[in-house]
Amino acid sequence: MSAKQETKSLILDIAESAVLAKGFEATSIEEIAAAAEISRSGFFYHFKDKNELARAMIERYIENEDKLYNDLFDRARQLHDDPLHAMLIGLKLLAELLDDMPNGHPGCVIASTTYQDRLFDAGVRELNRQAILGWRKRFRGMFEEIAEAHPLRVEVNMDALGDMVSSVVEGGLVLERALGEPRTVSSQIMHLRTYIRLLFLG
Amino acid sequence: MSAKQETKSLILDIAESAVLAKGFEATSIEEIAAAAEISRSGFFYHFKDKNELARAMIERYIENEDKLYNDLFDRARQLHDDPLHAMLIGLKLLAELLDDMPNGHPGCVIASTTYQDRLFDAGVRELNRQAILGWRKRFRGMFEEIAEAHPLRVEVNMDALGDMVSSVVEGGLVLERALGEPRTVSSQIMHLRTYIRLLFLG
DNA sequence: TGTCAACTGGACTCGCGGTACACTTAGGAG
DNA sequence: CTCCTAAGTGTACCGCGAGTCCAGTTGACA
Image (cartoon, rainbow over all chains, first blue to last red; front, side):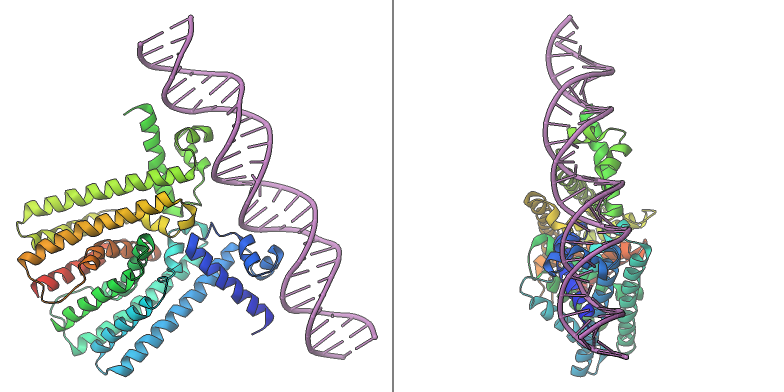
């Protein structure tokens, strides 16, 4: 990685944790620059404004989450041939992963920005939308595969079922942050897991 | 209501919709005052700073939500004696109520502030915490009553089940905002409803 | 007539985002 | 050895919004 890429990546690390801790607006460029041990001018050399920082942050966050989901559910599939059981294993792995974070999950960059909408340009908003739609597609696909092996007896909205994974994670994170209780998200995921089991196995 | 209370309430109305539309930091006192047709000084006559505005906003929001839940589940209980069916009816009523909002639910003030934590003092954070804990207690109590009539065959974390109502609403709202799709929350609530049904009726 | 509640208006300080631009410094190419 | 470029630094400046201070106004009511 070039020096430029290293600094940029360092800025993004610092920005992400600061933004999740106190919000985007409350995080000053001054403090990001100081933490990265560069000057304010140095910051503007890498990002023309805060919007560009936000966009880069979100892009990186989505890539990381996608990679995490890929690894996790690939691993789950290696552990069990049946798509339903692979999903149940994947959700358990996800819950464990979240439990292993000592101070709880830091929060979701997307949720953080959706509640500060107008600060960001249309590009940032579209990025968020595409990320959520991507996860819907991913999980909907998995649930459809499951439904082939384990026919659903209850009629359900499959798009909404796909969304439910993101929704439970996002909702759990809001509660976890508000409560300051570290295992809140993982408990919610375990309930989702029970739901999936009941839905396809009865 | 006194003139003072009227103005205060007007300011809170304006502030709430602006904050949900674009975030707390992005909402200036200037614009709130202008919309309320008072001066900046007038605003500071009612609230000593933005923190006090946030606190009042959240307090009012929690009161309103509590009242909404009370009305809704009382009504549901009038419609059915069995606590499980009352819960299912209540969730359906909640979903319908959310669907009837033309532009989707405006979002949750609590979620909005939890993602902008450090801006607010400890009092505001504690207020958020107590609200979520209050809802946990409310729904946990309802689920325990249900479990007496319909014994659970699956072992579940009852605190987390109580939290699940708030979690599904919060998560759904994040997705609804990010996607711009109005019926997202209500679909998620319908999935929660299916889960409750499967959990207690099999 | 005086008092008080609910304001208005203006001046000021600070911190932050953002712009502009001249200058520096380390490392590689010629 | 020199020149060039990438990756910065430092300084000055603008405008905006939060928050403070304070003197003055206006309408209702005792």
